[in-house]
Length: 107
Length: 155
Image (cartoon, rainbow over all chains, first blue to last red; front, side):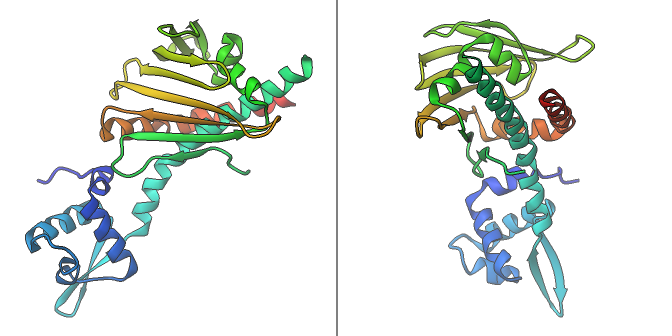
């Protein structure tokens, strides 16, 4: 069984980020995706496979062709990881600001 | 609520950049990092040690209401220039992401406003991501509680 892929690992690779950018604009077949890169078909297939495994891309059968779609929900999930981190700092900084305003007023 | 704090964590990078503008003169902003009692208040931590000088060390300890230690942070101060910058290492004890290097830059925007930029550099992208995910994993409740705590104190 394949190990569950880490989404962060998936987007760490520049080729995979380029694939996401392409597919985000329109659903594409694997060969149409591969045409945009100098790498071999196999290499691109492997990248597509990784992106599919972590659900950044979704497959859809259209007649005889398979099209890859971008899954914005998953991308949002990545952004959502940063939100709590930012909120944590925002809370701290709000507190810092209000404490220092009182500090200033006291002087 | 408007979010003034910006967090940049580029894909595949191994750093986090936090920026925040304050409605405070730069000297007061810096003081919030300098005076142990004030650090303790806004960070919500106990300041065990804070030696604000080159080669100085610091140690923070956060406990839950029952008195159990939740987080212990420590590091070494590499550079300490009042109202300008602090360079320090930071290690969260018992965490997997190891030691990080932090550059804190304090900047006056006007006489009454200032900007803080923190760049934290990790050993690897994986270590950085682990740090980013930490509040997601269990900070969410904590942040929410802290927010309520702050609001109730403001009343």
